[in-house]
Length: 102
Image 1 (cartoon, rainbow, N blue to C red):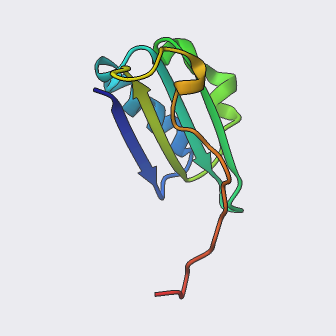
Image 2 (cartoon, rainbow, N blue to C red; image 1 turned 180 degrees about the vertical axis):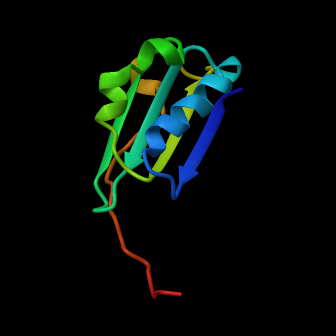
């Protein structure tokens, strides 16, 4: 049982996602994480162990600019409760502008 939120097309999406994670905290209290993507396609992430309010402060949210964000709270049903298992996991990020592709 975990909590997941996605936000798109919103200025300062990480702050909106943070509020969503806070309201979903009952779905997972072991760890929390956010990935935000800015207009240039640069993805930044932060994750940590504990409650949402313990993992994210003003300085962390300020370092996650962008208008797209995804967040996750974890309640482990498999795997141990360690930072390596906290999500979302950002690996091999590649940005592609799809305007006009479809």
